[in-house]
Length: 171
Image (cartoon, rainbow, N blue to C red):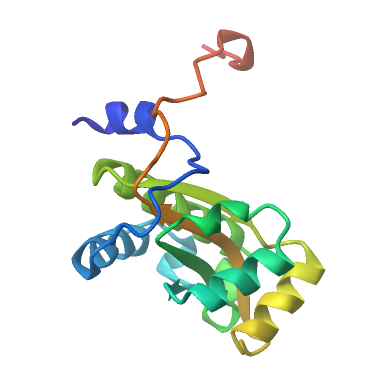
């Protein structure tokens, strides 16, 4: 499958086949894709938390209003940024870096036939506080986003499309 086909196939999945296993090999492949993302000055500020524990998934659903899909998801990957890894001209670029890593995770998952749904944490202060508390994160670790992962139990197909009106050509 080409990159363009994977991009067109990917969509946010909110219903998964409950109890399906995502293998450790698949998870490592997905995380490797995330870690291959570009970052400011190659600072690679990301860290990932893989959560398969049902009790922790329930805790996430209690503090994040848009994560109900975790009821059926196999796991969650939480993308975080280590703020200490960015300095000088790379300082403050963790949202772009973690966004690129997250997009790579979404695309790699789609290529593996897995569904995902990305729910933001950063920049919502109360979500940041709650995630730091649940996962005992120090102040230099910024929880950025939650990615539900599992075997889709709904139809695939992109909801996006090309819109010429959103492009300004300067020749």
